[in-house]
Length: 460
Image: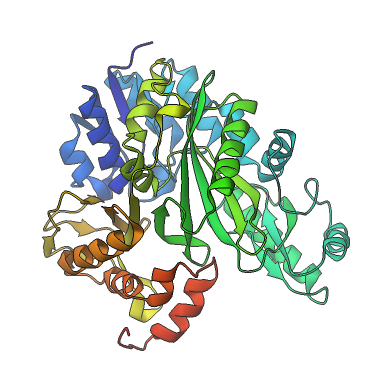
C-alpha cells in the first residue's frame, strides 16, 4: 500500500515535526485537534484539519473512535501517533489497521510485547541483552517482592509493568517500609495505566541513562547509535545528547549491537528506542525498556547521523524496505537538545500557560528549533508543558556546548516563564561540561541552584 496522505493523531511540536517530514515526502497531511488547539501551528500548517472533541484529552486526543472516524472521512492512508497520548496503545494500532489504514509504527502485538516491561525484559534476556538484576516476572504480592529485594540487596526499585513517565515507581532503601511503598506503587500504576502489576529491580548507584535508536522494516534492522539522557528531573528527561560522552568505543559497539539484536529478535517495524542504565565504574550496561515510538529527543540522533527518522517511519509504513545498511550509518560530531517548557524553574517548575508575546529564534546553520510556537499563540493549560526543543550541533562536545550557550542567549520566548534560564545555567556548569553526571545529578544540582516553591534565587 502506497501512502499518499497521513493523519497526525497528536498535537504540539511533534505534530508540526511530522507535518513537515510528511510534506517533504510529498504527502497530504491531516491534523486532528481539540477545541483548545483550533488555532495551533499544526492546524495552520496541515493541508486539512478535523476537530475531534473538547479540550480534555480523554475526549479528543485519547478518543480512538473519533480519530478513526476522522481518518476515514478524510481518506487518510496512514496514521502517525507521534509520542504520548495513543502512541504506545496497542488497541489503537489494531484499530487503525482494522480500518484499512497503515499505523506508522510497530504492530499492536509488538507494542503489547515491548510495552509490558516484564515481557520486554524477558524478550531482552532471550536476545542476549543484559538486564538489571531483579524479578523474573510480575510479583504477586508485597511479600514476594520483599523476598526478591532481600536476595538482590537494597536499594531496589519497584516499577510498574505497564506505562511510563515515572509513575508507579518507588526506590526503597530497606525492608521497614516495603509493604506500604509496594501498595502505593501498585495503586498509582493502576490509576495511571489500568494495570497495577509491578516488578522489582536492583538500583544501580550513580547510573547514567543511555538509549539506542533502532529502525526496522520487519526484515532488516539497524541502530543509529546512542543518546545520553542522564539529566533528568523526577525521572523526566530535560537535556539529551548524541552520542553519549565518555563511552568507550568497545562499550558503544556492544551496546548498540545489543539493541539491534533485540529489534531483530522481535521483527520490529518502524522507529524504536532501547533504553539502558550504564555504570561508569564497571562499564556494564543493563536493559531497562523499549519505547515503541519516536522519542522526544530524536533530533539529536538526526543531527549526528543525517537520517530523518520521521521520514524513515513514513517510508517503512508505506511498505518500503529500510533505505540503509548498518555500515552506511556513522556519527558526525556532537548534538545537544534542550527541552523548552512553559514552566517556572524558580517556582518548583510550576506550569505556566499564557500568551507568547514575542518569539526570537537563533538563525544559525548549526541550530535547529522544533516548536509549536508563533507570536500571539496562547499556550493552553490542558496538556504537557513542552513548547519546543533547541538542538545544536558541533564538531566536538566542547564546541557544541559553546554554540549551545550562544543559542540559548539568543532564544527568547516572552510573555510566559520558560525553562530557558535552567538550560543557560546547565550549559555554563563545569560539572556538566566535564560529563561527570548521572540520573540523580540534576535534582541535587537544582537544590543548590534554584529556590523551592514561592521563592526566587538567581542562577549561579
